[in-house]
Image 1: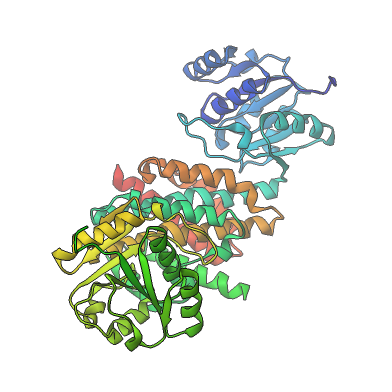
Image 2: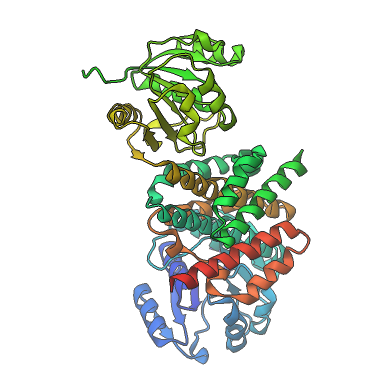
Length: 263
Length: 263
């Protein structure tokens, strides 16, 4: 075993992502030594579930871990880095949007360990299928971090800060906005006494097809067919909901623009 | 066997939907007697694959079938109904947007048989999982049509004209617009040298969660958290693509509006 190999972690944070990560580290054979959180309740709860100690004071953070994982909200990352009490430790955050430089107060062995997935507190995740997006400040830290990632997941990638920010916007479109399209569909159906269940086979097939190749090539519907009659009828039917109407127009325009740009 | 039971069909149309339907009818044990299409090439091709005859002239349409299925584009439905040569036959169309009344020239035994799915020519469909949306002009035709539907699919529903039109808009949001969200994500990723593959686990999880309950309850992301800092950063990053930027703003506003309306 190389002396570089990381076998133990401390979790700074005790929320949703820290909880899923803690479980994943433990299941992959890492020793989770400690949980740090200002909230005693969260810290003790997560520590108990992981079978480790916890602290609510930054100066109580132990110094023997191979990796310190800051898994807190974007606003709080800089704050936690600022109170981190040790020097020369390997410290990563788990955010898709925050730059690695927000960790600067924590030293110079810095990195990012961003799990590209949507985590819900009560939904189990198969972590081996979560892509891990990695970045390190020093070249010497790449190999050890890659080794950690490969023990947790089947897939990791080196993603630079500018790439990660674009990746995060992409995820907003492909996850958050997609979910809102479903929510609009459910709302429209409900207004006429129909259930969302009716759409599930269609939703499954749409996603399956998009994931087989380039989604732009799988585009169907009135906009890409240029069927103005149907589009106008739809826009007219949405006239009592100007928010939905605007979304309908904008996305239809974008579908047509992407189609024309490709030609 | 009731004398009402339908055991044979004629397909009017030879495109994508007609092809998938023809195969589904045959697999369910119906006799597909004939294919009608003005295009000899399409008609003969589909007829050959179904092992039946074809005609390119309306007056060649045989009169012995239990059900005549008009599976053509919306613009052409009225036209085909107008040249249909027989009286007293049970005639349905397969459209999500066209009213049943467009079939009026074909008599008074009219109906709708709308398979709620996205069909691609070369992608096999498990028809037993395609919801069939049914409507008939006469009550007496309900039972025979329901029997046809239940032989093809595990799920059928009685959907009125106004319901079907809303269902179709819902499908545009949940299928066509969702696919475009994927296409935008793929485009953004490509601009920074990243592949769409990275998002697939996230896409799978998003869709799985939305289909478990009410999608509005599953909403995540900066908009529903009201994280203005991240949203502004994203909007700023999209400043060289005003189309995407507009979509980002409109959908984020809609997510927040839906969230506030629910409270």
